[in-house]
Length: 95
Image 1: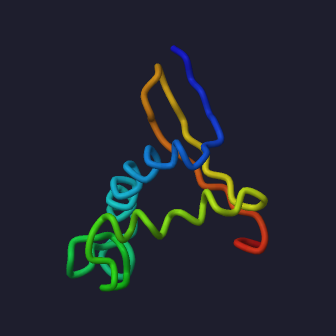
Image 2: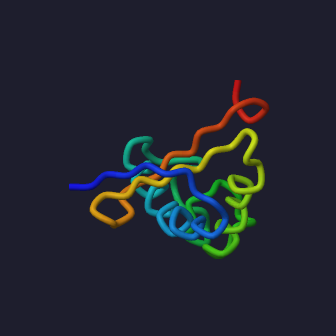
């Protein structure tokens, strides 16, 4: 089985963005009810009611491909199929 971890660019961003809502859904089971780990009133896993559609959430993630000097969006591919992702941040986005 071929396993690949690759740093993505803007052209590949949609793959991670497609997987992101499912990631947030999975996290909700680990953190219980409340805050950003449950859907807002529109069914989007975000703490703010300002996110009404998945497109709204989709656009917020653009920062990961706009700051290549300090934000690194990796995609994991197994057997040619997207299997996961990792967001790696450096200062000033984390300590």
